[in-house]
Length: 162
Ligand SMILES: Nc1ncnc2c1ncn2[C@@H]1O[C@H](COP(=O)(O)OP(=O)(O)OP(=O)(O)O)[C@@H](O)[C@H]1O
Ligand SMILES: [Mg+2]
Image (cartoon, rainbow, N blue to C red; front, side, top):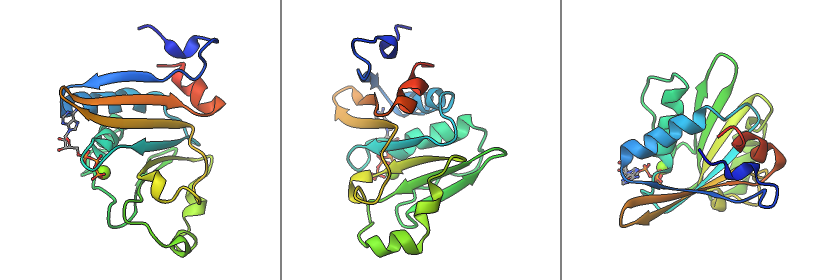
């Protein structure tokens, strides 16, 4: 496949994909699972029902998780433990109290042994560390358009394995 991320002239050129249905979103998650590594922070953007949790479900399945992938809308985070890492799936849609951030110990969740996937990061943006990769979903007549963008050197390195 043509690799946009190897181009020095456009080091941060986004990858744009069309996803026709839920199966395509799950398949993209599987592909992304193969390039993720501990320490990465991924922001997931898009309106309600755009596909952020579906993508996360695809990632978790590809990592070998066989249980139910719940949306963390009410708990703010779902925790998945793998043999060599933790995956934290956040959803900050209902987040409105910065004190909750400290009390819940979220700061500690961002570390070198964990992958953090974050839905609705814009609701907690003053507290969150910077993203390595941003993934944005948009509704269109053919399903969803998704845009994958490296934001840091780590993110860029990661996407060269695409
Ligand atoms: N590429 C696609 N084309 C059409 N429908 C899709 C596609 N991918 C996922 N869907 C469907 O769209 C919905 C996405 O729901 P999902 O919970 O993943 O959204 P979300 O972005 O996490 O929303 P929220 O912000 O409410 O958490 C599901 O019903 C899923 O079946
Ligand atoms: Mg969701």
